[in-house]
Image 1 (cartoon, one colour):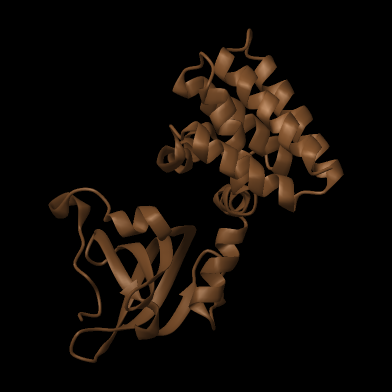
Image 2 (image 1 turned 90 degrees about the horizontal axis):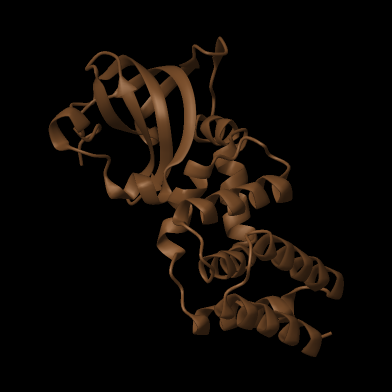
Length: 226
């Protein structure tokens, strides 16, 4: 395994899919002492873009100023690190990047998608069951995410990217999500979700038959477990 995978989007096309799936954004200018393929430690200045735990260990995707190209840098081969954005040395590179990531709207949205995945899927199904465009669905859910999290930085585009894999679910999947929520949520939380679902769907105009059926099912299941 080479110390720096020679990925260059100007030669190799778009970003590798693994970074789209698990990459976490973190923007910093780092001056690093990096062990090269022959074991020598060379100085590089990199503009970090993402970091992730890849199969061979924690790795940074960054623009290397020396090579003027995007490269991958294994964190276990970084012998020294200085953050030129803050003017401070960095002891734990992974922790430093993770702290930067936690200050981004991407982190807020990732937490929502992980912690409220069934809620968001239920709302997505309800919106898609009506006569709404994909853009309208995304905009409505993005507004809901900003409200739930209190983070106004969440963009429609960022949410749309995360919704792509879960769009177009069927009624069976919807009923499974509702069932899980009914067992997991408290009575007050079920009541709040019912209100949110009704307000979100009904503000889009006249309900479709599929939306009415879905809302009726949500109400009935939440009442059964009350």
